[in-house]
Image 1 (cartoon, one colour):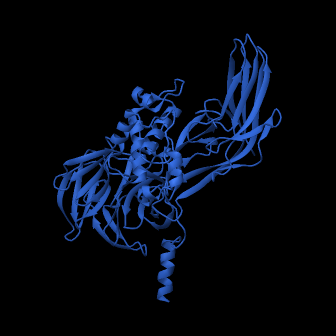
Image 2 (cartoon, rainbow, N blue to C red):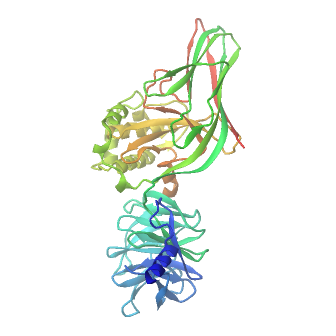
Image 3 (cartoon, rainbow, N blue to C red):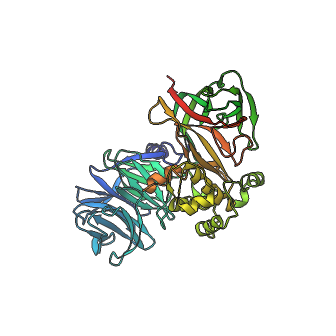
Length: 531
């Protein structure tokens, strides 16, 4: 009977134990206090600070019982950490971090907080990390007197909770209801999870799970940070997309022949489904595939007279979903695990890449150094590209070395630089492109977008959008790594020069004429939601 009772309690706390999990899954919940803030783990129990109670409480996570309490030395406790047998308590108003010895229940030291807005605390091997909300920084402190040792930019303003899992910092964001996994040397956000409640505050790591206390729901949540399912689909929606390409003869002489190649949306992607075959107009085109396996509908327009406009199109209903790869660097396989055929095909040079150019070689050396983990190779190149290029859509697609030298580029040019550097570093890389839903469900896109995918062992092809990663906050930059939004239809996947469209995407064309003339070309995609 006692065994059954214990199992019942465990199931109440961790109802999903034994089931397949995904990072961010809530494994169980426990009640917290009325005004919960800081959270810490002492190896056996959770310690919970309360803004108003005047106590810090110890909680047995296996039963949910409150087993101990200690008088809180802070007037307004926010951050809480455990280390060296002590609780470390940050006071939001008093610029102080208290060292509270749990054996004597006395304060044995006061440290200077990094500012008057100290929030979360975390213990790392004899040092403290603190959130300085005044400067939006994570500051590493000496436990002797609070002297700052180093600092990194916070993932975003305002951060609340902080925890250390032995490798990474975890930071809660109450405004966006997110929890971030942060690399501690440069502050790179590796992974972003949905917070379980609307006001994520304190965080603690118990050696297996991340714990979060929510200030609004007054609940403690045990959160999975790894799991069996590291790729997740969500947010399905359906739309009808019509892609149109128009050509107009400017004269004065006619155009004898125009070959138009429309890239056909991909059907083998897990987050993108065509609900019916495309309908083409005018008439049925021929179909061709290039050296990268990209399929095109081939239309031929003949005898285009001066001033005349002709058009071709396809229309297709689609189902799109948000796709998220939760990329944990330690779960990515080694360089030696990359399939030889993929490496041979997708590390070759190209006319826009010029990977042997000294500028590219120098950039790869500076960015990658001696790194051997494929994820960190990719991430360091991603950061390097964003540190050295600013977004500017000025027309034209320059080569990767010239883009790096110039320091500005469009989404395509960001992609060329990233492809060149990643391929030079031995990472199979290809480009993807398509048409986007622009703000409203019923919208028109005539700008389009291009990005890249890299092959990571144990994950497969993973999207990396270097231009979208050029953001002020790391919390925003990480959105460009490993995810697809449900607002883009992928039409083109290529490795470089195509025999039909060159380095173009969505469409391409060639013209044949005698005399003097020119052709004006426009292309656009119309989106219409399906009920």
